[in-house]
Image 1: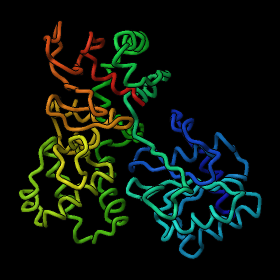
Image 2: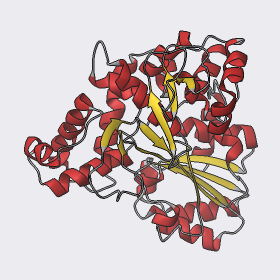
Image 3: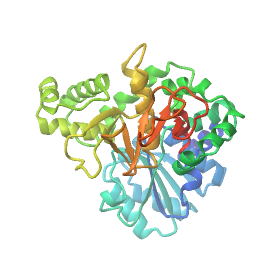
Image 4: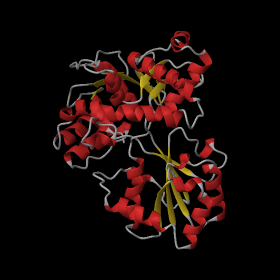
Length: 392
């Protein structure tokens, strides 16, 4: 136990958190079992350590442990948690909980029998939590840590504190909002950089961002998907090839038969793999409203613009980046669907046309909102694309 406290102390003393994530203030920390999911690379470990440091300092009532530690091949979570609480522990933080077999059963036992202990755990977006997991149903509260929004990227790069806005605020007051923002920072000076390397926090590291992103993608394929979803490693090349075919063609309407032939697997397996890639936060599947999610999607996008650059080295189509950005940022808080009248339908009835040239007036009879990609301030239903990066 003392070895873990030493590691905990060392990690907190060397913790560098350039920006507090706002999810910190959205979580009900009084709940006794809290799960935090998020795509690989978005900073879950840093987030957990930041909470431990800000809420407890060096108080031994809180302990962070990584379940990747070999110690837990011979020690159960239940016995460790029991010893921790009996020696004064109040909050146990379990990182990478999915590395431990039967983790959900043991967390269920701890919740049911240790009512004086709070447990916070992190894991892959592929993990089943809350309603999907019978062990955690009615026990765990689940939250998702997203990659940086464009707003968070601006705040970090400029050491400022721009606030987020609701979609309704943006639609009704975008001119005034944009004017307030550009008084503090020039968003278009940073927008291209964000599309290239702003979503994952490791852009702050002094290393090659796209190489790190490629490593992250492979870890998602090899661990988050193959390990957690129990796909035999011999099929990993097929999964990787499917991701590449999707990435180089996105956005596109999938021809499942053609993909099946190119990947050399069945149509059913292709559909399963597409859903696995979505769960792993590598792609986004776009459906018409109320369409069965098990059917073929209308369009496929990569999950965020940075992933586009991991495939295309050099010039990237601006429309592809714009649509990927819009879907990624708006989809965090809203339902985004395929739209025959525009590029996207949001929350059922809001039609959005993404990108395109700014015009003095939108022609009469044309419906919906128009996001323009290289303007600071819009007009009427023409709204700067970058402003949709302020939804979270």
